[in-house]
Length: 311
Image (cartoon, rainbow, N blue to C red; front, side, top):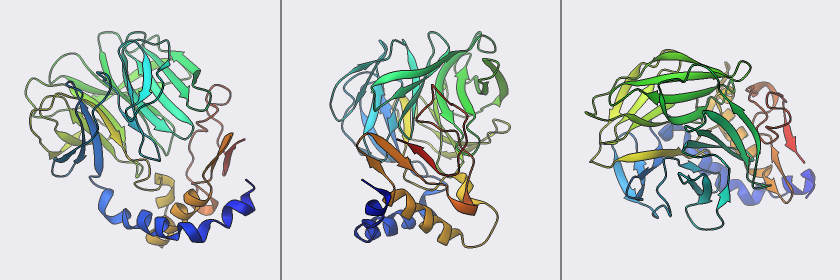
């Protein structure tokens, strides 16, 4: 479908753009997220209050959870299989003990705690198209989560050396090394941080295992701010809605934050998936935020374009 034809569809999607705009004020600080538990239960949760709504169960025990733009949830087995929680094929990644998955346009970033490997699973080809094994900085840690900062493209890990001994680490893909950012303290007794996720607005959210505490994390220091505590859930994986807000670059200095959000929501809605590729123009014009080019991770991981296309 040509861009002109896609643009003609904009009036039909006006209601969706308005709905997207309505999320701006309510989801930035503490959005609805999904959590998966050791007993396969999946909940949609208000991170501000820990109010939960049961969702479909996971088909496998999973330490990973990710959500795409259409609300499909992805889980991963200890044997390295990725599948949609709503059903479908099981795709083998070749990596054991996948600590976490994180959705970006075109696929899923994952991290194998068994081999200390960051990899990109392309959802179009159903295959791993990029991988990097980290050779320093991870000794003695159990990795529980991986996430990518939308504004910089940098990867962060949640890791621990035992219960209530949690740390935020940053990955350097140029040197295949991890460095300490800082400790992540919390009050969930006998529990590790089980996952972290960057929200589309740039804030970092952490979740604990035992009582599913939600914490806001400073990505520069690892310092935490308590948000809410839940019931005993043995929560293993966390997913956020990538539709919730524009990426941090959209909130660049200037006026008209609401107008900017509406503009970028509109662009994301009219320039969307098509057969054989992705048109992803979420950051355009003067409101552009620099982000890595995700969908061709194996070929050009750090190419930065104003309007990105995978054809």
